[in-house]
Image 1 (cartoon, rainbow, N blue to C red):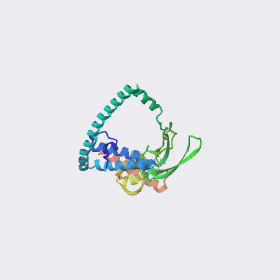
Image 2: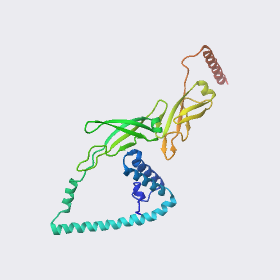
Image 3: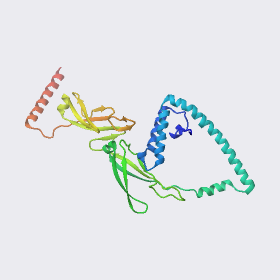
Amino acid sequence: MSFKDYYKLLGLKTNKVSIDEIKIAYREQAKKYHPDMNIGDSYSEEKFKEINEAYKVLSDSKARKKYDKSWYIYTERKKKIEDRESEEKKTFKEKLLSILFGINPIKKKEEKVKKAPIKGENIETEIEVSIVEAFNGTKKKLKLLAVDGKTRTFSLDIPAGIQNNDKIRFVGQGKPGKNGGKNGDLLVKIFIKDTKEFKLNGADIYKELSITPWEAALGTKTTIQSIDGNISLIIPRGTQSGEKFVIKDKGYKLGRGMRGNFYVIIRIVVPKTLTKQEEELYIKLRNLQTKVSKEVVNK
C-alpha cells in the first residue's frame, strides 16, 4: 500500500501547522474538489475522498502524532534522497549528450515546451439565487452562447448551504485546448441575493420585525418565521426601535453542521390612521405623560 502525504493532500507544505491551519486548509480543499462543484469529474470525487481521509487523521491528535513519524520517514528523508539522485542523473545525462552527440539539453527542452499540450481557457459566468434557495439547495437552468455560436443549456444542482461567490465547475466545457491539450472548464459563480424578508451578512441572517408602540411599551410574546421554521420570541417591556435580538445557531449554514446566528431587528410602527377611540386614548396618554413630566420637574 503506497504512502499518502496527508499534508500535501490538504495543500500544506509541512507538518509544522496548527489544528486551526489544518481546518482552514481542509475547508478550502473540500470546497475545491467537492463533487457538487465538479460535475462529471471522477478525479475530483476520488480526491474529495482522500481529503476527508486526510482530515480525519490529522484532526485527531493521537492519530496525527503516530502519522507524523511515518510522514517524516517517507516524505522528508525520501525527498532529500530523490532530489540528490535526480540532480546527479540530470548532470550525467547532460554531459553525456554533449560529449557524444553535441546536443544542447537546454535547447531541446525549449523545443519540447513549444510543442507541449496547452489546456484551453476557462469560461466564467455567474448566476443569482435567493438566500432561501441557497440555504435549502435548488436546481437552475443556465443558457450560454458556446464557442461555435450555438446556445447550450446547463443544469445546475446547487447544494444546500452553498456559500456566496462559490463556483460550480463543469469540467471540459470551456474553450478548446491546443496541441492536443484538454478543454478548459466552465466555472459558474454563485451570487446569493437577499429577499424582502431575509438579509445575509457573512453567515448571519437578519430579519426586521414590526411591532406596535404598545407592544414595545408593555412587552409581548410573538412567533416569527426564520429561514427554516418558526421561532418564539419574547419582546421585553420598554423595547426600543432598532434593538436587536439574537438567536444563536439559527443563521446560514457553515458546513459540518455549524451555522451562523439569526438576528431580529425591532421596528416600532405607528398606525397611519386611528379610530376615534384610539385617538382619544393617545390623547389621554399624551396628557398623562405631560403631567408626570411636570411633576418630576417640580420635585
